[in-house]
Amino acid sequence: MEILIEISKQLEIGNDEKVFELTKDAIGRNIDPKLILSDGLISGMNVIGEQFRKHEIFLPDVLMAAKAMYAGMDLLKPHFIKDGIPTLGKIVIGTVKGDLHDLGKNLVGIMLKGAGFEVIDLGKDVPPEKFIETAKDESANLIGMSSLLTTTLPVMQEVIHLLKQNNLSGDIKTIIGGAPVSKEYAEKIGADAFAFDASNSVIIAKELMGKI
Ligand code: B12
Image 1 (cartoon, rainbow, N blue to C red):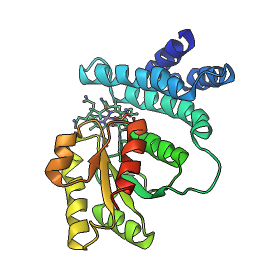
Image 2 (image 1 turned 90 degrees about the horizontal axis):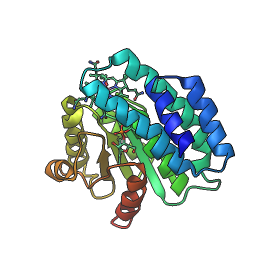
Image 3 (image 1 turned 30 degrees about the vertical axis):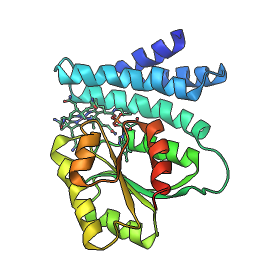
Image 4 (image 1 turned 135 degrees about the vertical axis):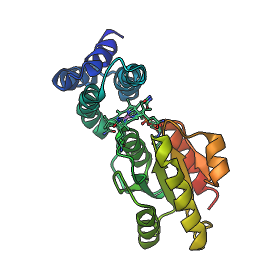
């Protein structure tokens, strides 16, 4: 769809105002918000990721693209969140210590909330102890961790280790995600589950609730 391609292009050049306008326009035209997200915003961010990897663009360009992504995401957010009392379970979510990437984690939070989970978002750069303390204090069912950097992946393992040490791994299940994370990695570090994107997170989180 023309407008979604345009959203993607404007995100790539970091034009947050244009992304805002076009996203608003697309919503007004009753285009499925999930499609606006996948074929507009995420599609543009994928191009950015690839260009950054090849050193064709630099950090300030990525920052501008991220700002543009947020401009669109903020408009889409209410369309993913249903009214009503959350009933499915409680999840503490955050990006692990040392990592400041939060776009993906925030998307996962929005989708889980939309599906009926209560979401406690600890933000980014979250120390392992903070995940455990909050999950304990809030009697959460799940802990969701995001890591986009390979260097911060071991922090996830620390959290899982701490959960075991505190005899909490039976009551609190862990779900992990982020670009360098895989199902194999989740198994290796003893996480209960891995999800590759926000929609998949909802399916997997529901499955995990059935195991508690
Ligand atoms: C945007 C971006 C940034 C932005 C982040 C802005 C923000 N507020 O988030 C900024 C400019 C700040 C940034 C900084 C850096 N970045 Co950066 N960044 C990216 C980029 C281009 C896109 C990430 C993104 O937002 N994608 C869009 C979202 C929607 O997708 P996602 O994050 O993958 O999330 C989805 C899934 O993974 C999953 N998921 C994610 N989290 C979770 C959590 C749970 C619980 C579950 C179930 C699922 C799940 O669901 C999400 C939704 O569908 C990636 C490239 C890439 N291929 O990922 C590089 C990338 C991650 N960055 C990279 C690097 C190196 C850096 C810097 C170190 C650069 C530098 N020299 O300073 C710094 C690190 C700063 C820090 N300490 O964190 C590397 C990492 C390499 C590595 N393997 O370690 C990448 C891969 C680029 C590259 N190819 O080199 N970056």
